[in-house]
Image (cartoon, rainbow, N blue to C red; front, side, top):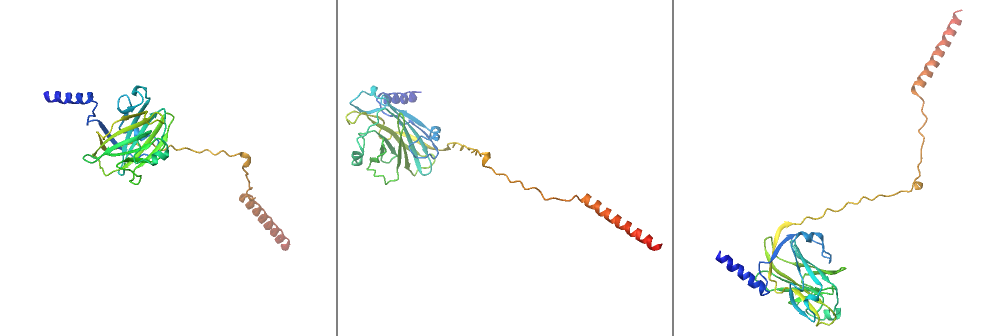
Length: 271
């Protein structure tokens, strides 16, 4: 009982200090989405979590966190080739420093970007991100786009969706470390910025063998309407036939007449 009380006190102190508790995380189901900047429904069967500037501030300047209308929900899936991460972001003021600036930087952070902090236990942390206009992937250590990482962004009516596929060497039951950080640029002035989430990949996520259920494809029956005026019907009458019964009756009649004629001739010769 005393040991449990000590552990509880440590957790409370960490929470009060604003430090992440390592136990946070979730189980990631197995499934393969389409990486296109759209949130596939199968993501919603797996683990997800939501962050915002008020509860998860990292670096906020030029504005009060309470005045920032923003949030991000991160979804997870995996298969034998990739770990898939889809971040659905509410951002009412999507702006950019411009493609020229982004392309000239090794790592873009002072912009509307979604950052993934990712690591295997005991390894260095990988940081990769993509801006809201899908200009290019950047990261640290330097990410050139040739490492096999995939990122696609799709704009929505309320913000944007950033979807990633990260090549991996994990197997069922393995754990990876992760966190999402969203940098929300409030104007073209880089000194008005709200970064929220977490850095350093402090949270544990476990890869499950359980697979998602894929939706059954909808079968659509196509009805083709045909104009009756376009249809030509040709009717061929059957060939004329003679009733077998009638033919037999006629033959019998002719035969009987022939026999009668022969009988008459015979009688005349006897006379």
